[in-house]
Image (cartoon, rainbow, N blue to C red; front, side, top):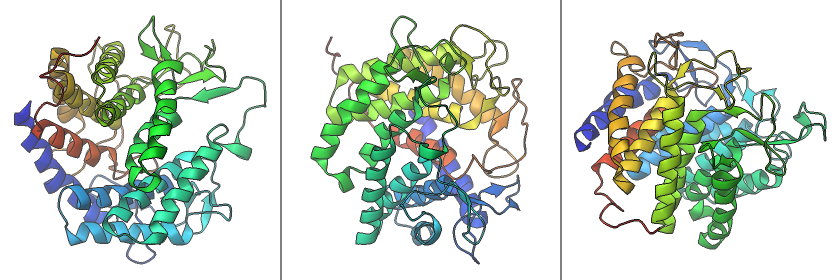
Length: 394
């Protein structure tokens, strides 16, 4: 596996990051363009706050962990200034989208804008320890916790009490966010928080008999036999398992790492398209037609997060299935998503593996999953095994 490390490093530093440095920065109004075509030309100027936060986090993290390149810090500060000036309503909630010059377009219905704003300012504070950045990260995280039971608040479309569901995405992200913000929140606060999110991810949404993770359950944790209740998103579940493995390292819990590895492998096996290759976007637990018409598309982030999971699973557990699957997913991902002619990667493929759109960024794809995965796989494959010398406690 280590022979892949240099490939991922080179792709990150020489092709993907320069694409965003060269094309995403709005020199006139601040912040970042994310709607970029195959060559990097801007095709829409709306600014989506969760993608602004992701890009600030990315360049802050790389400056902190890879190399103190001035252009990376300048990118992070440039985006943060726009977010700080325009990103929140009077209650401190982060809008979903803004115009190019920072006027609100879509209300703060989506709590993930807040999640990535907290990540952004937490990472920025590590490289530029401004008390204002610390306060924004802390206040935003506390607001997320206040809103977590009703994340959409007044913007929800559901009739109260009709079918109250809770979604997997928020506890999944909180697994990662709590570690990202430990320097802001403090070790004791994170220690108190971790068992709660572990319970949600590894018990409440997890179906032991099937070995699968649901996207939605009823408020009491029970199964809902509905479109939403039967929904599986293999990519979400697999991504969550590498978050859990990071928590396992934090907790020095070998058994937790093994369990996360086993669940992720089961989701991968279940979600793999045996006919055309690649991982399905959505599936139905009972094999019924999913309501998402894009259910059989192959998405960039699903495959990249799977590669991170497999690299970490191999490093932490030595499970041979991780090695076998890594080579298989690596070949599919690099052959189908990587654009050999222009930098950055395609995001959306048909079931047969052909690019559906020529864009490199948009409303949902920004400077995040591709560079983060390249960084994570590079770093993971360069490390010596952490748990493999020791048998797992049973």
